[in-house]
Amino acid sequence: MKFNIILSSIHQLLTLFLPLVTAPYVSRVLGAEGTGIFSYTSSIQAYFTIFAALGTGVYGVREIARKRDNKKQYSTLFWEIELLTVLTSSVAIILWLLWAVFSKEFQLIYLILTLNLFAVLFDISWFYTGLEQFVYTIGLNALFKIFGTIAIFTFIKEPSDLNTYIFIIASTSLLSSISLWIYLPKILVKVSLNTLSLKGHLKQTLIYFVPTIATSIYTVLDKTMIGVITQNANENGYYEQATKIINILKSITFTALNSVLGARIAYLFSEKKYDEIKSRIALSLDFIFFIGMAFFFGLLSVSETFVPIFFGQGYDQVIYLLYVFSPIVVIIGVSNCLGSQYYTPAGLRSQSAKYIIIGSVLNLLLNLVFIPVFRSKGAVISSVLAESLITFLYVKNSNGYVDFKQLAFYFNPRFIAGFIMYLIILFIKQYLSNDLLGLLIQVLIGGMTYFMITYLQKDNILQILKAKMSER
Image (cartoon, rainbow, N blue to C red; front, side, top):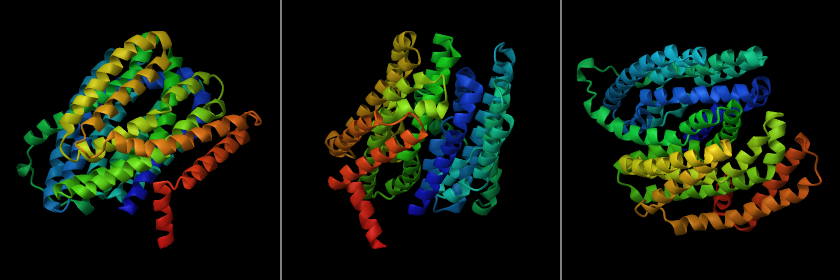
């Protein structure tokens, strides 16, 4: 389990860290406008990608995890789910090409983005996640991502290289997906095509598809609505850069953790080990609040210094977006934990879908009100409010696996530690220059302050780490 968490963390961090390495360079070369065009066109393409996947990713993890002790059964299950993905992806690719051909604006970019739909067709990462064989998702997958990073620095030199940049991103995604197929002969056994059946899977994936559509409203649709309502590519560029930072923090806080434990808990549900499930969820939430609160107040403290240094000139609006976005790491952390570790493994995806739809409708309505007035900031406000409602509904209806009193227990001491850290950084900022050295000092002192206060509070996470280290 520990090894899987480490591997998953490496994979998730690599997926987000490499774009983070290229972001300062790309933001300066392409500018806010080029970044915004990429963000807007990708948001349009994402709807077709969602249809192509049809919820098979989350569904596949759950079903493979339940059958992982029987090679024959999970081999059959793999080909059934993958065949369904091939069919849905093929339909999506045909519809997308029609859209691209008849689009007058950004036609070439749309054609290049077709590669992302083929990436969905070949993506079988869900299979390895279900088996908890995370070692297979590293290796060649990582190699192609590194190759893509090198290609960006080599070939992207001026704003007119936008199409080349998009091609590099899309092609490396496709190659990463294809690379996962190399390991299949080691894991699967031969299955007769006559034994495969798609009927039951189609119905189940549709259950997972509904919340996927709903989720896209406050992730993808935000970008689309910013582009359509504001008619300003720069606004999309600001939003894209802000979400890039938030996604990095989300990955560190909970993405890798939940991707591993979700598969494990699906197995525990099948074994009816409910007490172990509760303890794992409790520990996950404890960790999410410990890390998430540090990021929440950290963003409030250093964004003003960080954004100009990281993205360059012309991105001042990103500072204010990060201010508003800052609590969402903790908010989504709770809902993502319950979704991955309770609702999905317990087979309650349709129930969680209702809450996601409610939040998504709220987000859509708020976007229509706030984006015309506050532009990209309006989309951020809407997302934070919608995610808060979804998290409230998740916790309220979690059947005792977590409650608000428990969350308050995790929240209160970390909020105090984070707020003190925030005040100290604000104090020392007035004596520091707004350069990289000043930023590093802010981060270092802030981090030391947070950990010192949580240590004095005898924080549970630090106590667990201390106990683990003493065992060695």
